[in-house]
Structures are given as structure tokens and as C-alpha cells.
Length: 538
Image 1: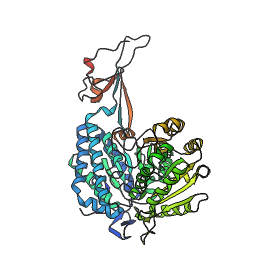
Image 2: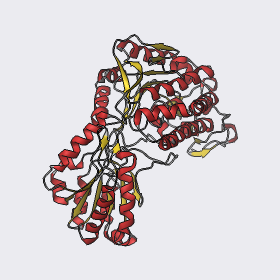
Image 3: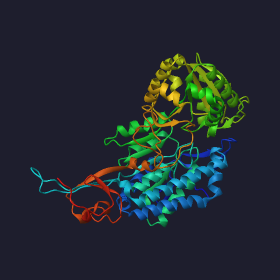
Image 4: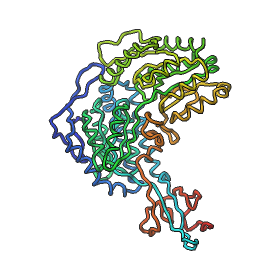
């Protein structure tokens, strides 16, 4: 497929702006063809006008039509074959094996949402039947379900060019809920984004859906992103990226005449607490697994463990040195693009110069000529220094971690209290550790969206029970996830019908329950039709 470098506005391609840019291969520093056109303000506005026009028709589609559409996107991504993988590799330097795995995850979540839509119970239908004889006031008939919220703006992430980008989980869940999507491509992988966007564009056409339900714009300027959030037709935003960018979008959305939700995943240091008995039993094993997790993908995972906390003793000393030796043997890695490598390099240098922080070990071989290479590193400090320096509690996006030695169980709890909200917190403990540090566990459960007992946080299972979110600043709303089928709940709102005629009700709320979904009828979950259920006793 020959890339056109334009912006996709429903059925059309637009290149009216004078500003252009190219993708850059982070392995070589060479620019890649073609030239990509920055979307103009008028083009960005047009995408949302089209989405608003298409919303009524799309939200009225039967579940089977939406599921067919999601399946078509998944099949289209697979049909691109090596072309998609090769372009993503050229733009991100991610290994082909990793990209193949990520494509598999992307199509899996699309098909997972297709199955969710077909089954239908996700709409959370609730029915309380009328009781006209109730005194002193008759009881009305109330029927409630979740409905789509409207056009959703999705921002592609730099570190997942497929699974958190144009065809990723935000887009899949927004489409599944019945919403149009306007996608903003990440400027680090515009070609990959165009390929994925054209798959969606074709799926829309092949499925006979309104072409305005999907558009994609290219560009690197913050003003473009803010204009998408501020457009009056935008009803919600999905974002994965830095705290600075996510907060800017969140603030812009809050300042609109009609504020809208921004579901932003922004940053996390994903602390690992290694308690003393577990450390003595399996310290070397933990160092091995942690070294792999810290350096996985050159540390460019939102769940990379950036902090390790333990009681300062001989076991922690040995663990720290083992971890340092393993990290030091790691070759410099190529980061996703020059900007992200520069930010990591700057934070690395700053941490090296931070008072009371020691560089335990770093990649022995210096980064090469490429400005996108990064050194892996292990730093160390004491609990009191950590508590006094708030910068040590900020995410360092790249292949490094900080080991903090505590002098007591009380200091362990002080460190836990000092932490901001996290996507994940991991605890390595024996049964005895858990009994001795019950207070610590009580603190940690309030700090995170996912509490792991053993293992490492990298690797987020795409499953209905997964929660990928956490208290601020990990995300802007800890009640919601961006991974798993519950992600659909971000892009819906409840609608209650009172005393509505049967002919006016949606299928999910009609008496006959023709879809056979689970519904809460008079306080009890059932798939039965209303006519076969005895009236509730009052």
C-alpha cells in the first residue's frame, strides 16, 4: 500500500496545509518517505463535524453490525501482513517479534469487544416495574441502560504503535460502545498510523456504515491536539502518554463551556516492595526477573518498575549488587525517537548528580553515535533521602530503577505513604512477611489500580478482569481502565426511561428481551422476558 501522507476525513484525504514533516528511523537517524501533511485547524474541525453528523446513524446500528465492523478491522490489520510490521519497525526500532506480538494483542482486543457487543449484557440494563397501586404515591416504570456518549478523540501512544494507537483499545472500545472516533496519530510513527487508519476507513466502507464515524489527523503541534479537545462536538478523550501532555488535555477539557471527560493514562513508577523473608529466600531470582522487566523494551513501558523498596540489610545489599551487575551487562538500547531519548538522557544525568543518590551500575558500553540510544542503570538511596526529594518519586521513562533502603518497618510505611497514585504496586512477600507488614499492605492498596503479589508489572493481560488505571497522576480517573472489556465504560452514559411505551424502548429494555441479555429486573438478575416473571411484591 503506497502511503499518501494526508489526513483522513471520513471518506476523503486532505492535504491543504503547508506544514509538513517526515518520520525518522531511530536506528539510523534517516528520514523516511513520504512527506506527511500537518492537519489544519479547518481539517481538524471537519473531522468532528463529520463525526457529529454520523453519530445518530451509528449509535442506532444493531449490535451485530458493530461487531462485524470490529471484526473487519481486525481482519484488515492481519491482511496487511509484513507491510505493517516493517513500517512500524522502521519508525520505532521495536523488534519485529515484539511488533508481531503487539499486532496479535491489537486484533485480539478488537475481537474481544466484538464478542462483548454481541453478547450485550455490558449495557447494564436495569428495570423496576411500575406499581400503580402503591400508596401514597404510585411507583413509575423505570428502565435504565448505558448508551454511547458521542464523538471520541483518541490520541495514539508513542510506545505502542498498534495496541494503544489508531486501532488500539481506546478506538476499539469507543467503536464498540457506538461512538464515532477521531484519531490523532503520534508524529513518531505517522506511516504506521496511516496504514492502520486506512484499514478502518476500508472497514467502514465495506460494512456500509456512515463514513464520518472515523477520521485521522496527522501533526506534531500541541495546538492541533488542543483544538480537537475544545471542539464542541467532542464528547470524550482517550490518551496515553506523558503527565505534562495529559494534564494539558485534561485542563483544556475542563475549561470548555461544557466540560468533557479525559481518560488519560500518564505516568507511574510502579514500585516493588521486597519484604525481608522473601528477599532472603529468593533474592537472586528476584534480581533476574527485575533486571529483565526494567530493560524490557528499553524501559519504555508504562508499567516499568522504577522503584524497589526494602529493609536495609545484607540481603538487600546483595540484591542491589546482583541487580546492578545484570543491568550493567545490558547493551545500550534504541529508544522510540530522539525526543524521548533526550528526555531520558537529561533525567539520567540529573539523577547522577543528585545528592545522596548513588549510581550502582549502568550499561558498561557507552551509547553509540545514534542520539536515540539509552543506558540502563540502577541507582540507590536511603529512605530519608527519598522522602525529602520529591523528584525521586517522578517517573523516569527509560531503562533505569532506584533501590531505596529503609531502616525499619515504619520507614517502609513512610515511603509507601509518600507515593503518588500508581498503575501497579508489586509486593514480594512470604506468608510471614504479610503478617508482619499488614499495615504496609493497607497503605499500598490505596495507592494503586493493580496490586501484584509476586512477579513483575510489565505485561498487561487483555482480559475482562484487568484494571489498567490508578489514582492520579497514574490516570485522571482511577475508576476506569484502558485495557480489558471494562474499558468500554469510559465512553458511555446512563439513560433512564420512565413510563416509556414499549415501541419507543430500545431492544435491551423491552419486555420480551429478544437479545437474551442479563438484566436486573426488580432487583434480581435474569435473562427471562418480563412477561414470564411474576410481579414484584410491594
